[in-house]
Image 1 (cartoon, rainbow, N blue to C red):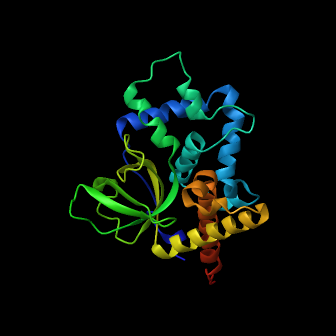
Image 2 (image 1 turned 180 degrees about the horizontal axis):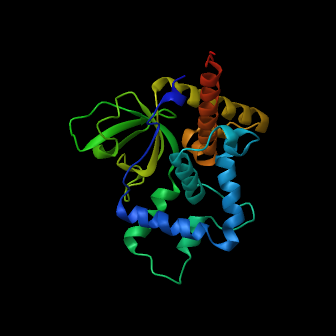
Image 3 (image 1 turned 120 degrees about the horizontal axis):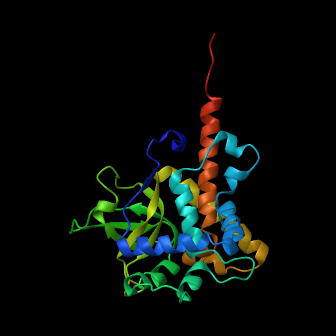
Length: 247
């Protein structure tokens, strides 16, 4: 596994202005005193590996991991104390004006989820780059400058794609900012590890409703982040174990 040796595993890309402003509002709302405990619950759930005994001393989360965990908090997390989700709370805000351009991103963000997407060859146009979900094969088209020139065909990104406002089934999408880049080999391990956990959950729960990838990724996308962290830690331990000291 090459994960621990990759120098550019994570990257953050520009986000459309109105979506970025919406995310800033959600972040500010999540910092409110009445929500601080729920914020801690959500972030610990996504970044659990780094809170486990001994984990923090060996490895710290990448900035992009923390950013993806924040996005889980904003868009996927249902508070355990019965509060409304952050997006629902923001919709109910009457003390400040939220421009319509920002409100237009609320539904696309609310319906977005963590995904593993493979970079495909350029199509006929150069303005957009096609991506394919490893989970269910869904196709996306994102602005080409999002990936840059160094990202190669066949690489996989763990990220959150948000469909552009308008048609909820459109293939046109943007990245919500953070991306974790993996080789095809590492992405396969990450997907299969998470899929095995999904099957175990279905067997234990006696329900196979999690067979739908978007539904599963929306509710349990934090497992992708958690397993990514475990892979980083395992790769680091493997690399350390191969060190030979000489005197």
